[in-house]
Amino acid sequence: MTRVLNVTGEPRLTTKGARHHLRAFVVLIAVVLLAAACSSGSGGSSKSATRTSASKSSTTAPAPTTTTTTEQPGWTPVSYGPSGIAVDRRSYVAADGSQITIVRFRAGQVHFDLHVGSQDPPVGNATIGPNAGPAISAAEQPILLAAFNGGFQMSTNSGGFEVNNQVLSPLVNGLASFVINSDGTGHIGIWGQTIPTRGEAVTSVRQNLAPLVINGQPSPAIANISAWGATLGPAPAVARSALGEDAQGNIIYAASMSALPVDLASALISAGAVTAMELDINPYWVQLALASTPGGPLSIGVPGQERPADQYQVGWTRDFITVLSGG
Figure 1: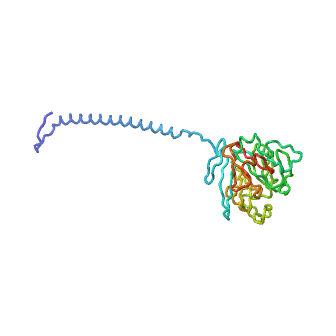
Figure 2: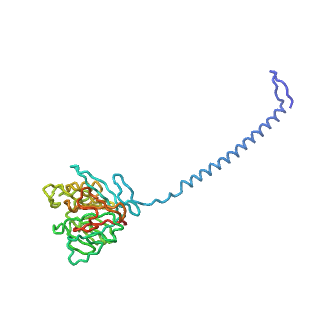
Figure 3: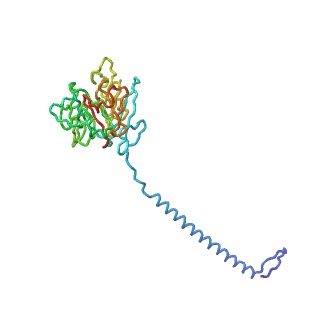
């Protein structure tokens, strides 16, 4: 390369030298661009693989979940069944401050048996098996979760009674009824109107008075104390019990040692009941027993109740219902 001075005294390239230098520069630029292109292509391929992997991950089906009955706000679990909570409870405070115990028996987790008492209802010539007798049977005991009182004595003409397809007292249309089907499921409705439904395999029925709750509303006669049974003494607030059903098919028991009919109705409605019936009243008859595990020791379910927790195991004079683990 021939180097000469320009007019300013600075060196400059001759034309031949400039062309040679330019070619070298162009080659260098081309090499750089080619390397950049290769690098870009490699990086793009890596990002594409990452996106593909992420896409596959996002479309992977989630693991299946197990359907169970779970705890709900305001409810405290009492006992569990094979696939979740079988029995839970809550409290309701009436206008006068008295407490009403509410116990829910979860649909699909429990089934029911109706029992006769040793004195009531009269059984006549009916054959009463051990799972419907005056005491909890040996077959029920290992899966027993709860037991609660039935309704008024048959002599009050408050409704009929059927147990294991044997009618002990004629069923009456228009009365509130707790029915137990052949599969052990329980439902509450108005006999001859909403129950039995077509094809329903009813085996046992316990009726008691007109409905306490209809379509989620208290009975129009809710304030008529005399319509809900004779009380011991002049006070209208006495020991009372009731049974309701919510829209999901759960059966809900409510009781207190001091309550008005409207208190029971309000408590059941607050717990979601759409239909309900009053059960027995007055302190000697209202009783509930609960177990924390199937077949476990029973405890008193209604604070202040007079009868002991094992009364239905020993045997009782009046009808009652057992709640057993398993749908």
